[in-house]
Length: 192
Ligand code: 5GP
Image 1 (cartoon, helix red, strand yellow):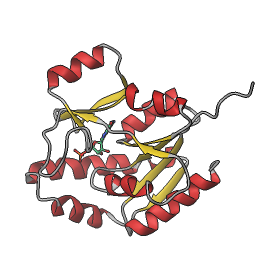
Image 2: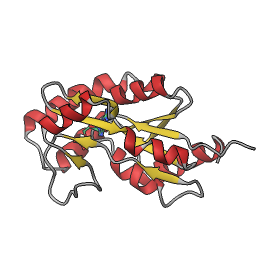
Image 3: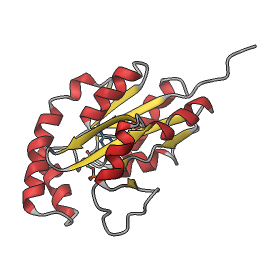
Image 4: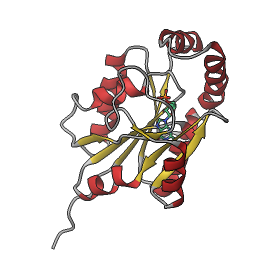
C-alpha cells in the first residue's frame, strides 16, 4: 500500500518586528497548498486584542517550564535574554504532518536552527526588512513596548540579520503583498 502523503514544515524567520506574524497569517489565503499555521506558546503577557489559543498559547512561566521538562516542545528559547520564553509545541505539528498538512512556523532564528536540526527537510525562509530604519519604524509603530525593549530588539535584529545566509530562501518584506506572493511561489515550487 502506498504511504500516505506526509505534510511539510515551513519555517518563516527573521528579526522581531519584520512582520512575520502578518505575512504568516496572509499565507493561508494565497495558496492551493494545505497550509496550517502553528500557534506558538509564550510566557509574555498578551497585547491588547491578542487571543489565547489564536495568537499564542499564553502560559505562566511555571506551566511553560513544566511542559518543557515534559518534552512537549519541539524547540523553545528565552527570546531577548532575560525576557520571555517562546516555543513550538509538538502537538501543533505532529497531527498535522500525519494528516498531510503543511505546517507554517513563524519563529526566531534560534528556533529556526533547532527546527532545521530536527527536520532537515524543512523549507526555511528568512524574512528581511527593507532596511534597519524600516524595522525600527515598525517596532516603534507598535507602541506597546518601552524604549529600552525596542533598543534590545534592534540590537538583537542586527545579530539575527547576520543569520540570513543559513536559510534556503530570503524574501524582503518591503510590502506584505510582495512578500506573501514571493513566499507562495517558493512553496509552490517546493512541491505544491
Ligand atoms: P512577539 O513577542 O513580538 O510576538 O515575538 C517575539 C519574537 O519571538 C519574534 O521574533 C517571534 O518570531 C519569536 N517567536 C514567536 N513564537 C516563537 C516560537 O514558537 N519559537 C521561537 N523560537 N520564537 C518564537
